Image (cartoon, rainbow, N blue to C red; front, side, top):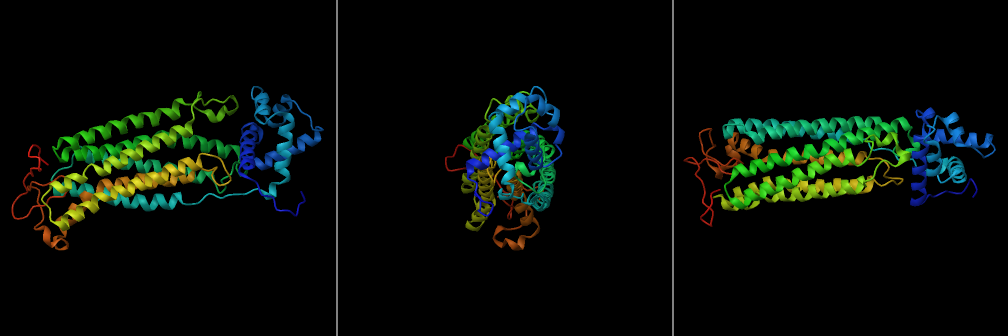
Length: 405
């Protein structure tokens, strides 16, 4: 192949190059600060000077490979001849390698959505105090979920900055890649707890909003599944690899559980609980004595949950795509971006009914058919779907005549 020809690498070749870059980076502590392609050039020069023959001891002496890792390193690379051949070819065709860049989307997303959720949570708390007359347990859970979401987003921003401009392993140093492994581990451990707080706040909210047994059972079932999924999502990253800091022991294959498959399973179950959380309050709307305009507005308010379900779906798609190495997907920053979107939209969904109630309280002219605004002493729906008219609102008996909403 001449230098003038355009070289196109297929997916399998890119996977081989990315894997080789990972092994070379992990196996060369002496040059961990250098871009992996630069380290490969040092290997190419070493092979040439050594007349294309070397021993594990040579790797320890020239590249700082741990004596216990040196033979495993050679084996991972396919043996001495394959190792030399692959590294020499990668160096030869360096100019033709794709060099995907990371999208600088994490920081703008974090700032924009954090501003929105901060405002929404603040309005929710004011609404609960001013309109409902008290701040309850599920409100404090929502605040905790908000703080966890902000903390997760802040770590994701740090992850984006530490990752640098380039997405492919061969464009990164081992120091950078190792730090990314560490940060990704922290994000994976924290993510389930943030999702748990958001969903539990909604389940407790819906549970206290009505005495309808099947809705309450639905809340309990959703909370139970969410809690179980959270425990699984928390312990899988911790115990799937032994030792836990697998990034320092890659050559001994420390991970016995397919973490990618486990992450996909956890994400899929969260989507199911998203759908359940969104659907739970819908039937209640039709049991309340609302005008058509009120009913449509209430459905739209609760319907924000459908957007959270869509965001969760896009996040799962990112997990499926960006945890499988390719020329476009060796970086996991887009997973971080979709997770930030998922969490913040879920929080906005949790705050929307209270914000709506606050708007109805302060701007009754916007809703002329809704009557006068409610007061602290008014008996009203916890979600803000019932408002005081000429008299305090009363409990509504559903059509079955056995339960109260």
